[in-house]
Length: 597
Image (cartoon, rainbow, N blue to C red; front, side, top):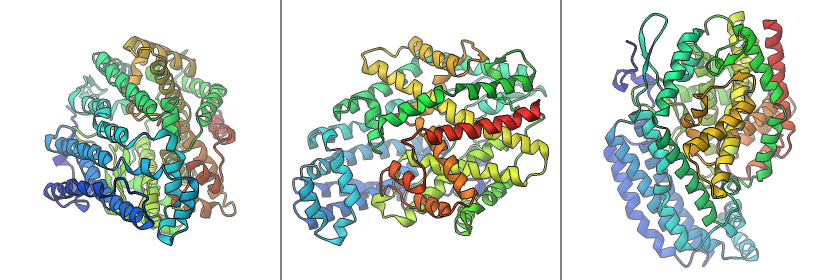
């Protein structure tokens, strides 16, 4: 029987290096306690935040010192927890870190309301009073920009302290899906029993054997269905939290609140959904191509992930994938390439799946640590592209942290997804230009159009679902399981019209963790659109394109996301980048159509 390994069986060179943050849990505990003691220091500034330039600078320096250390505390706890969700010691650390986060939010909640009491004229005078304070220009203006959505210090303190409770649905969902839930086993073509899991489900859906796919599909969603009421309750309460927090901050909707952090108009969201809906024929062409390649009258939902490229998907070992990825970033210059290579060699990546490990992939870390990447590498093309994606995030963080002070080191997800998908585009270009093996090239092309489907169209469908369920709650409706199934099924029928529907697929909303991230998913689609435009400029050696893109990666949060992207060369207030990305998708489909026909 093939089983997922215990973490202890995996070679250390394939694990991330958390000792570079803290040498031991005991050192983490000392740091935790120091932060706890330092919280008292903020009380001395309450009521006098903007008393003088000196007072404000002292407070901002204290805030930075505490937040930088807390960043290491929460990062170490989160990364340790994700190594094995069954480990109670690490889960306890994460719980303590989250409690500390709420406490920190509570004791610092007076800062923004006090800054917002000063007028623009007073702010201008303050900013002109010295070079040190002028560095905080954009930071302070951002605080004042959202002053209508900040409540009194007492209310903000209460909301901050409630943060741990508000995040409970997401935390419980993660524990259920990654630690407590066990999925059935299925028999493969060799007669061996294999466990279905969060990580390998999609891989199994790409298997050429239809009976095997159908078995996996039905057993996986059948098992999810047993927890239908539980997961629906978690999602419902997560949405309720989003809605109530947005109301507490005087926003018209949860969406307005989520997007206002990056000063992004909600029109961008609606424009994305409308543009994608108006171009579903391109997605349907892709589905028709899949149908032809499988020689079926109509596809079932368990057929949707099967590669169009004939034959087994190439096996891409981790070492080979790294070589491809490093070579693919040459258009970004030797400095970028060497930094990427050095990062990989210094254990940024936790490579392979192990029992209890958090599913999926992400890039983490904080200002005072190296980047860290969680992978569940599966030795296939899809995993290679996922790794390129996460390395794009990590390099973005590295370049930002090296170029910006702490105050501007954090960047919005809206721009983060541009950096990651940009690296996917570079990898696609490199492989199609250099690989001679025709079968491998076809699988790369197939992966490219699959990523357009899943990132541009599927994530937009998710965004539509997310907005609809928030709207239900905002209009006083109930998010019972039947309602969630109905909304999701309606979208699935529209977006995947050529595919035969069944009752299992309407449960797919139950397996999407991003629905707990509060209007997150639309940024994958906008990110892809921007990344395709910017990578085209760099690959074609357009004058100034590379310099502007590197500058974008170094900018952090020193300006609003739309402004940063406009400086880099793309306007996401316009639907043109989205339409151009759809056009590239269509061209790739046309290439595949020629091959299939």
